[in-house]
Image 1: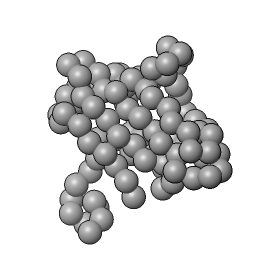
Image 2: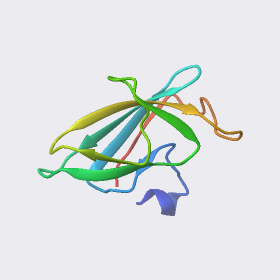
Image 3: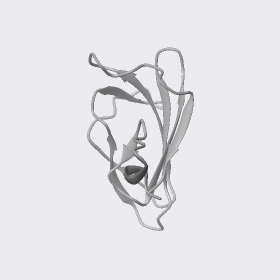
Image 4: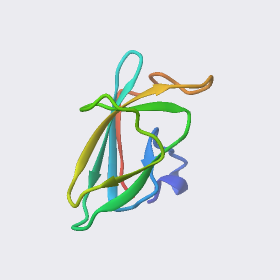
Length: 97
């Protein structure tokens, strides 16, 4: 059963079905990871908008589309950047399509 049929919406998702998204919630932000399961580089945009994204390794701002190397992983922190973006609705999750 797909998440849309079940009425379940993940906190974070990716626009590329080859990229897995997982997250853990902290008191004020999320730790979000992107995993490219493809043998080719994959471009991906993390959804939804409304979060300030920072690369957890470098501290650089992460905006827009990211290209993950083949079998690559990227770890981000996500902080709500607008009213209505929830800081901690669930402890963890994983979005796969």
